[in-house]
Amino acid sequence: MGNSSSMLTQYDIEEVQGHCNHAFSQQEIVSLYQRFCQLDRSSGGFISADEFLSVPEFAVNPLAQRLLRTVDGLNFKEFVAFLSAFSPRATLQQKIEFIFKLYDSGGKGSVSYKDILDVLRDLTGHFISEEQREQVLKQVLEEAGYRKDSSLVFADFVKILGNPGLKMEVEVPVD
Image 1 (cartoon, rainbow, N blue to C red):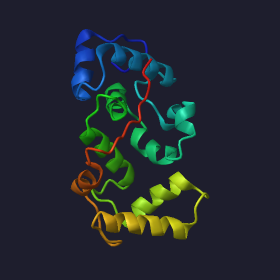
Image 2 (image 1 turned 180 degrees about the horizontal axis):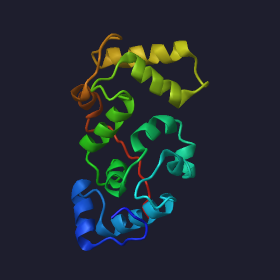
Image 3 (image 1 turned 135 degrees about the vertical axis):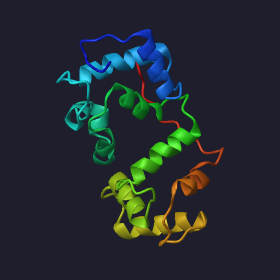
Image 4 (image 1 turned 60 degrees about the vertical axis):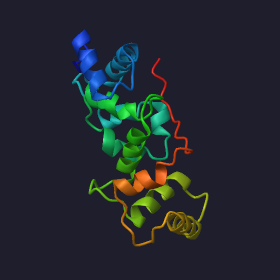
């Protein structure tokens, strides 16, 4: 599995399904495998950051550089696990884990004020000033019961983003 010249077996499909917590159907996994093989131009069984950048929607994403740190060198199982956060069948917990990893760019298990500000900077670019960004972030943190010097761990993200009324519906079409 992972080499573009090989085919997925039923066992491979079921293994990948289990790895991504059944976020994709078997047919969707086959479609994702075909896409993976198209992206894996070197046929090495892994997708490099450069190969990911060949996807136009990925390349223009304001968080592309941050996402590249997450996706560089993924094999097929890891590729599907990465995309599973965008599946309509992904749990809220899976989506929050994905978001937390984006903010925790250093992989230290916590997110600082600076980490959040960096993401906001990536998302807003030159559309708002640094002062406005800091003001918005300070207000959001205070409303959630945190201070500027707070370091947020995953449980804090669950507390903030785990609101059942909050919709996180970003999906990646697999066909």
